[in-house]
Length: 362
Image (cartoon, rainbow, N blue to C red; front, side, top):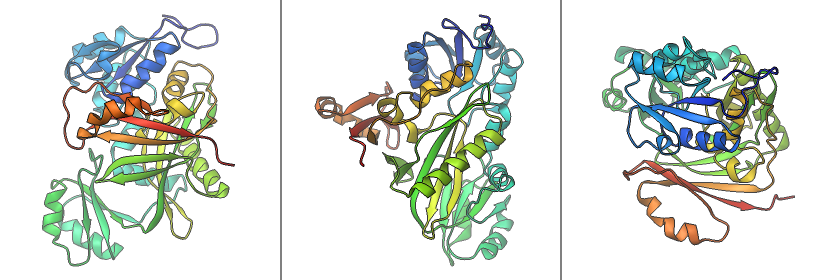
């Protein structure tokens, strides 16, 4: 369907979503509210997003299926950053992909990500590339003290990581991350971890959500509290970092930047994701425009929505068999339960989340 004179895709247009997980599901639900159709491309039948939208189920390297999918939609986005870049290139030959493939490729590679932060004047923890095992010991000596070894690609939710202390068994740590190109980061003694989601529209306009505080359990996000308990000056600094990143990458869509607040008050960028983020789920229930609607607005050329929160919020992930508490949660006054439609419960798997709102503290 052609865009109108202002460049926006009108209601009735179709958004293509690469990936079938819960982020795609919530994006499709937000798109439906604005009158858009969604078509999901995923490699798994009965994926969460495929339950609420049309779906093509095929491998991400199936060029013919990707081309057919692309021709059936008006614009394409993606719902996780481990999507093969080649799949996006295949789709981009037929339809615009938002955010860009460049943003995806930088976010997929922790070394490229650190170099991007440095090029923008955004501080991060000290680090060294570890392309192979012989490079590990020299990198550890250069950084000194405790460090975290992470795979360059594909690690998430604490996977592909190993903490290294002076005297640690380096061979065991290298084996634990999978014996693949990695990055060694100096361990940061931080006060708290925060994240900020920024949006950029097709017209270059930008908007930011409030910084939030994140607590992890076993390497997986457990609780997000909005807003983060930080000073106004730190909050402004965190927003500035996210806005700098979204503009430097020329993103049309969203970016989430995760940061450490060091004990001396410094902000250190940790990771970024050019997509909706788990730490932004609270926006569904506490903001006029959720992160998912904001993504839809941006990639379809609509004006960005209001990011102001009308309540404080606490979002708790339901991991593994915690989802079995749904009868209690659905009966809890004020609890806003979101289940992802996953048929198999596994340890460490995000099955849903619950958000609880509170009046904005003065």
